[in-house]
Image (cartoon, rainbow, N blue to C red):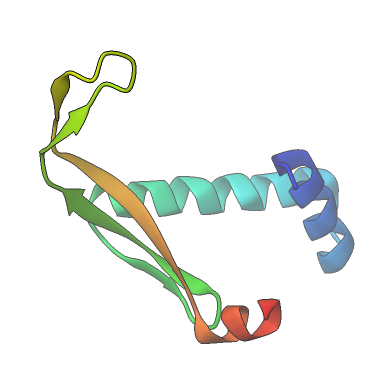
Length: 90
Protein backbone atom coordinates (compact mmCIF):
# COMPACT_ATOMS: atom_id res chain seq x y z
CA UNK A 1 0.00 0.00 0.00
CA UNK A 2 1.41 3.37 -0.98
CA UNK A 3 0.57 6.79 0.46
CA UNK A 4 -2.26 7.51 -2.01
CA UNK A 5 -3.89 4.15 -1.28
CA UNK A 6 -3.54 4.77 2.47
CA UNK A 7 -5.23 8.16 2.11
CA UNK A 8 -8.10 6.53 0.18
CA UNK A 9 -8.48 3.87 2.88
CA UNK A 10 -8.44 6.42 5.71
CA UNK A 11 -11.02 8.59 3.92
CA UNK A 12 -13.31 5.60 3.33
CA UNK A 13 -13.01 4.21 6.85
CA UNK A 14 -13.39 7.55 8.65
CA UNK A 15 -16.05 8.91 6.30
CA UNK A 16 -14.07 12.06 5.52
CA UNK A 17 -12.83 13.62 2.30
CA UNK A 18 -9.55 12.57 0.74
CA UNK A 19 -8.23 16.11 1.28
CA UNK A 20 -8.94 15.90 5.02
CA UNK A 21 -7.42 12.42 5.19
CA UNK A 22 -4.28 13.69 3.44
CA UNK A 23 -4.02 16.60 5.90
CA UNK A 24 -4.39 14.22 8.85
CA UNK A 25 -1.79 11.78 7.52
CA UNK A 26 0.66 14.59 6.70
CA UNK A 27 0.16 16.03 10.20
CA UNK A 28 0.82 12.61 11.77
CA UNK A 29 4.00 12.14 9.72
CA UNK A 30 5.24 15.65 10.49
CA UNK A 31 4.53 15.42 14.22
CA UNK A 32 6.10 11.97 14.51
CA UNK A 33 9.19 13.12 12.58
CA UNK A 34 9.61 16.18 14.82
CA UNK A 35 9.30 14.06 17.98
CA UNK A 36 11.86 11.53 16.71
CA UNK A 37 14.28 14.34 15.76
CA UNK A 38 14.14 15.49 19.40
CA UNK A 39 14.86 11.94 20.56
CA UNK A 40 11.37 11.32 21.92
CA UNK A 41 9.54 8.01 21.65
CA UNK A 42 6.12 7.89 19.95
CA UNK A 43 3.92 5.15 21.40
CA UNK A 44 0.52 4.22 20.01
CA UNK A 45 -1.03 1.76 22.46
CA UNK A 46 -2.03 -1.45 20.72
CA UNK A 47 -0.32 -0.49 17.47
CA UNK A 48 3.35 -0.03 18.32
CA UNK A 49 6.06 2.49 19.09
CA UNK A 50 8.62 4.46 17.11
CA UNK A 51 11.98 5.29 18.69
CA UNK A 52 15.48 6.41 17.76
CA UNK A 53 18.49 4.20 18.43
CA UNK A 54 22.20 4.84 18.07
CA UNK A 55 24.09 2.50 15.78
CA UNK A 56 27.80 2.52 16.61
CA UNK A 57 30.58 2.72 14.05
CA UNK A 58 31.71 -0.62 12.72
CA UNK A 59 33.94 -2.25 10.15
CA UNK A 60 32.43 -3.76 7.04
CA UNK A 61 33.58 -5.06 3.68
CA UNK A 62 33.08 -3.70 0.20
CA UNK A 63 31.38 -6.65 -1.55
CA UNK A 64 33.00 -5.85 -4.91
CA UNK A 65 36.60 -5.52 -3.79
CA UNK A 66 36.63 -7.28 -0.42
CA UNK A 67 38.40 -4.27 1.11
CA UNK A 68 37.57 -3.34 4.69
CA UNK A 69 35.65 -0.09 5.08
CA UNK A 70 34.60 1.90 8.12
CA UNK A 71 30.85 2.39 8.46
CA UNK A 72 30.23 5.56 10.51
CA UNK A 73 27.96 5.75 13.55
CA UNK A 74 24.43 7.01 12.94
CA UNK A 75 20.95 7.23 14.38
CA UNK A 76 18.25 4.90 13.06
CA UNK A 77 14.48 4.82 13.51
CA UNK A 78 13.06 1.65 15.03
CA UNK A 79 9.47 0.42 15.10
CA UNK A 80 8.32 -2.18 17.59
CA UNK A 81 4.89 -3.63 16.91
CA UNK A 82 2.42 -3.71 19.79
CA UNK A 83 0.82 -6.85 21.16
CA UNK A 84 -2.58 -6.15 19.58
CA UNK A 85 -1.09 -5.58 16.11
CA UNK A 86 1.08 -8.66 16.37
CA UNK A 87 -1.93 -10.75 17.41
CA UNK A 88 -4.05 -9.49 14.51
CA UNK A 89 -1.33 -10.17 11.92
CA UNK A 90 -0.75 -13.70 13.19
